[in-house]
Amino acid sequence: MDFSLTEEQQAVRDLFRDFATREIQPIAEELDRSPRFPKEIFAQAAELGFFAMRYPEAADGCGGGGMDNVSFLLAVRELARGSLGVAAALTMQALMGTNFVHMHAKGELRHRILKPALQGKLLGTICMTEPGAGSDLFSMSTSAVERDGSWYLTGQKTWITSATFADMFTVFARTGEKEISIFLVLKDAPGLAVGKAIEKMGVRASLTSELSFENTRAVCMLGEQGAGIPSVRSILGEIRLMTAALALGIADAAIEEAVRYSKEREQFGKPICRFQAIQTHLAEMKTEHQAAESLMLWACWMGGQGGDNADAAAMAKLKASEMAVEVCDRACRIFASYGYASEYPVERYLRDARFTLIGGGTSEILKVNIARGMTR
Image (cartoon, rainbow, N blue to C red; front, side, top):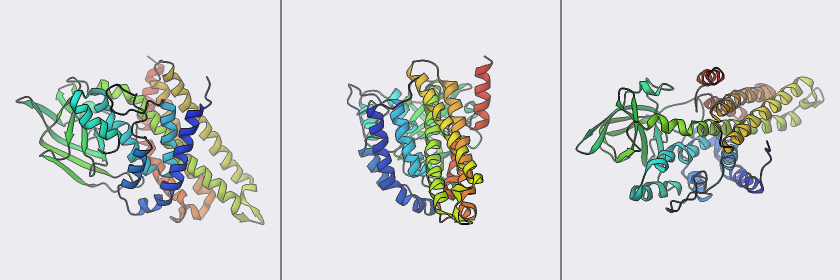
């Protein structure tokens, strides 16, 4: 297994590292204190081709970037190093918010919806989670009924990323007792109501809201009836690897801050990085980070070989998210009392890192999935 980066992958990493350093990091604290949708960052990310990069170049001219998954994950990681909240909003557009339109939309609809979405001109999001349905998708209560050739949705969703600003919604709804289907709904559809943003511990630049449908007409069903669960499973590995990349990015930022501070802060006449207790923290942070990175690249390698990397992606996400929380906690310990102060970013990193424990499946559900894979 060769985990070395190609020249193209290095160029992608460097491009997004520079973008995150110049444009995202300077406003990360502001977005945490006064949450808002970072529309200027969204537009710049579109110019860099971020939203299109993971989609294949297609003859229909919808503008896919045709890049490999490692390149996409490198970009995600650098965005998260700048701000996990901003990265969460951007990756929603680049993956879940547009994937099912790309997978299922045909003809005129594809050009009218997908092409501008990949250019960042239409903002998309996905609507799966409900107040009573998270990992257990079959327990969702949002339903869709067909009348006169159109589908009408009724129900409630929650934790919907960028719902207040979205132009299109990919909605999962029940069409039978054990049947979940996918629908495309536009923002001006009658009966669609967006609730206020949910106040959160972290990733505040990624605004999330509740959403309700009351006899809301969908533009169309995406794919065949009952295609919801198979469609989700087809990209679940990508979602988990993307979450692992987000976790690696926030850990990158925490390690950089911890190393810098440990070299500057002096106690008892020398920098604290010379004390064994601090060195132990730094060494364990780096080791755990390297292990998570290797797991993510291994899962990518397996996927690139055409094999089933579902278990590998689950392990990579599990390791990376738990690592990110531990690394950010250790960074705060190195900062001591200043790690508890909002004037230093490590306090924000620790709050933000907990988001990665949830997105892409909780650690608890991932462990169940991994164990099932071991005992099939």
